[in-house]
Length: 378
Image (cartoon, rainbow, N blue to C red; front, side, top):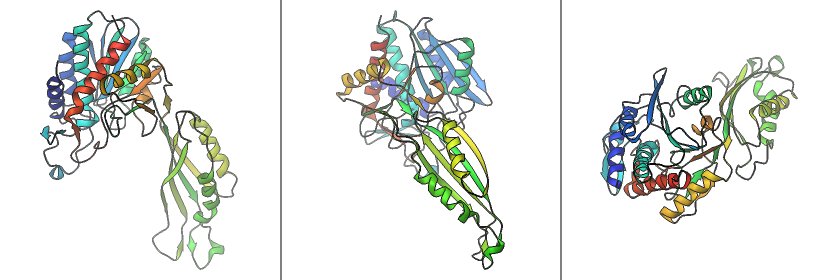
């Protein structure tokens, strides 16, 4: 197996315009490749989302490659230097929507398995793939559905490597051993609308909530821990008023978000926000949305195996990080004790002219194969 095989598979996947939640046949192509390797493949459909669970072996430990075939919309196609779904090699890079996020990772995983199984057909444990077409969308019918089914069937996972693009300046310089949770709130503060010249006849919701907002900004929610920065509370939108400069508004709406670490729980954060608001004399309504729980994999077997594989392949001593947004790792962590994310550099993801450097494709595949060699020897 050579880099050209991984590259060819990447290009085939990019050419399938799988804008979320449409898989466009990507997973069927993976099934066609995995079945001859001894994988038992199961397609799990949910509300227009296509999910794949494929497993080779029936013993522990169970090592899972996880990822997504869906991509974000291209944006204005005319702004791309080449068509978004026409994989194009140019100036040492492969261009196309999904090149970095994350069709190269999926191709590298499949070819890594081919090589590993050819060299070690009687490897220990089991290898599996958990692939969805609902990661870039609402993520309600994808990985979470598969994890629920696996849990209901009593199937366990020991290690999971998610192919998200985690590298920063160079391939292998960063892996994610956790992600912060995301808790959003919409705070509606009630006032009384009136003429700005007669404030005694009105109640300005901006004024009455100002001190509470200042308290929320100043609050130290936690101190973080070895792996996480302290939890952050940020306002994203604030809206009040009629547009006229002589009217006191009758209501104000604030959107805010916590990106929180494992040092806090969602319920604790909710209670503390309400405690701050309730100190002040104003009417409010607060709706909460929990879109993801934090997860953390401390240094251990999986991170060591992946770090060693990166060092062997690139000479780089990788950094463990929990920065960035949420990922499907949050769902997998509910049924798997060790979840790590690793993939190519992420500078171009979701952008016009998304790309991956050609020189990174073969090493990425080799790192995935070396990780299998460390964890599932004969």
